[in-house]
Length: 503
Image (cartoon, rainbow, N blue to C red; front, side):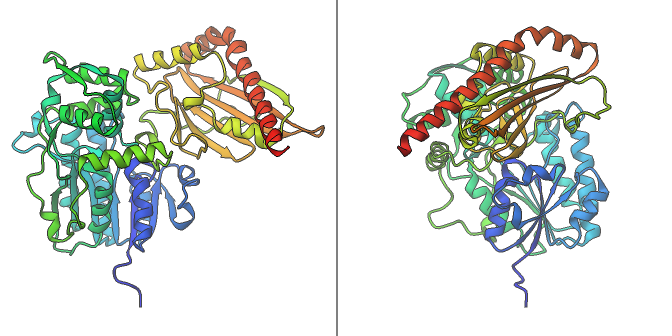
């Protein structure tokens, strides 16, 4: 007989920070997992990809929801439209209603939603749009007719989370800080491990449970105290903080965007959410899900665990795991029969006196701390320009210093395709008047060694796109030509190192 505790679970948002960590936890608990993804290829390189079923679709499309929810016992709603424009609240509302309707029609027994901790006694009109929308989504799901658990968290502490990265970079990069008044707001952070533990357990709550739960760690701290405690755990000197009340949330988000890897589109809702105290008003979930021995993870331990993951390059997902809102999603133009309009190319190839494995190691290690192998000042300037235009800039770095997988963010690129040992294709997510790709490829050479092929593609949008390409084309020999020469040079050096080690 089947185990009644072994459920068939649907996870939406599996390409995101929480969803990508929840899936292996559900599998470890013995559940069957189905993932709903707009681009299933982004899950292909996940270590658990062969253990789950993937359905292509979108939460705003009732048809794909119907397919995804068929036969499901518990459905996790981990998506939101934050950053997609001024109408994101309407998009969130429409998606949540579609999910609620289809879940009820499919006979789903439990919905689990991770929302934001809403400050007590603050009218909805005074909440940030981000928190207001999260609260509304929770109400829609609770009214669905399907038993629903809405878990409400404030700051989530874990390697790669947007909240943790914001705290980390503000503290590490600014020994002296001029800060806005919200650094004195009281917050109840929660470790990502406790969030995942509660999410997994919520799937098996009794059917009569249909309510919100505040979830948090054991510490209630101001943001200033969080920065000082982070500094102590990280072995940094105590930070000097000078609060300035004139820094509005808008100005604060620009300041956060300049200092941290978190772009303004994500920093602003995070900052706006810190205007009000976010502290749990109840801990009722322990009636059904007891605290672990020793209680929930405290702030210092959560920071230590996150920093250990970062040091060991063992960060499973990052805030940038999900696609950047508004990023291009058109497929790569096929060559040569693409009929979509102008397509500019910069193509280069060089022979390398190195084994294909040596060249691939250099290619797969590109970006992040290793840089882009040409004219660092030009790359840095392009990154700063992108930040000023509201883009992500170069500071997202890499999830892993050596390995890439489809869907990874890589500075201001997104990994669109990886064929190990042969091809790396990147899609641009910087602000551009068009669509851009960069391909780096390895081909065996009959005479020994291998051949390096590099191709940059740009599909302009309007007159501005054409002007952009011709405006930067004089620098291509310096940037792209230098990249090809330096990558092949690094591969040759890698080959000499390997040969010396084997001698």
